[in-house]
Image (tube, rainbow, N blue to C red; front, top):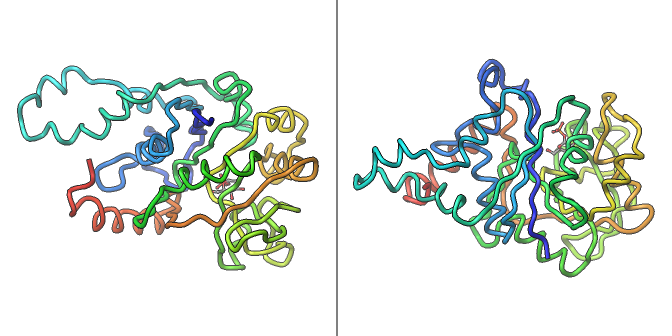
Length: 279
Ligand code: G1P
C-alpha cells in the first residue's frame, strides 16, 4: 500500500515576496499553522507516514519545524500552552521525515524526479503544500485518492472545474468520464491559453503516482516555461497505460497568492481556530 508522500518544497515563492525572501513559502502560517503542516496532517490522515521533502537553499526552517524543540517544550511543560504543540507532536510521533535538496530549479517534474532516491520503486503521493485542501464533510482529499488508487492501481490526479479564463494557471485534462467524478485521461496540457484548453478541468496539487513516472520524467524534454513538467510525463503515462483524474470532494485554496491565502485564513479561522480544532 502507499506509505510515502513527497512534498516538492524547493520553489522560491515569488508570488509572495517579500514575505518569502528569507522564509520558505511552505512556512507561511494559515492562522496558527504553517501551510506544510496542513499538508502533512492530510497525508497522515490518509495513512501516509513516510514524509519525503524536496527542499532547497534557505529552507532549513522546514526541517526544524518537524523536529522537537526541547527548550521550548521545557519552557511550556505543565502550562496551558502545551496544547499548542499537540498536533505537531502527533506528526513527529507517527511519521518519519527525509529530505533531499534540489540544487537547480527546473520545474515540478524535475523536483519530483529529485525525490526519487527517497521514494524508490513504489507508488507514492505528491502534495503541493500551497494548495490547501480541506473537507469538512468527510475524508481528506489524499484519503479519497488513496481509496481510489486501491481500485484503479494507476496514477491519479486531483482536478477541479475552474473558470475557463484561468486555464493558463494549471495543467488541464481531457478524458472519458467513467463515473460522475472520475475521468480516464486522454490528454493533458500544461497551462494552456483558454482558447487552446481541452476543457476547464484543472489539476490541483494532489497526485498519486506509480513509480514508472520517474523514467518517464527522465525522458521528458523541457516544456512550458522551459521547465520539466510533470504534466508532460503524465501525458506519456496516460498514452501508454492509464491515468485517472478525480474530482475531489472538499475545498481547495490556492495559498500561493494573496487572495486564496486570505480565503484559506478566514476559512480556517472560522472552522478550526474558533472551534478549538486548530492544534
Ligand atoms: C503546478 C503544475 C500544474 C498544476 C498546479 C497545481 O503548477 O505544473 O500542472 O495545475 O501545480 O497547483 P504551479 O502552480 O507550480 O505553477
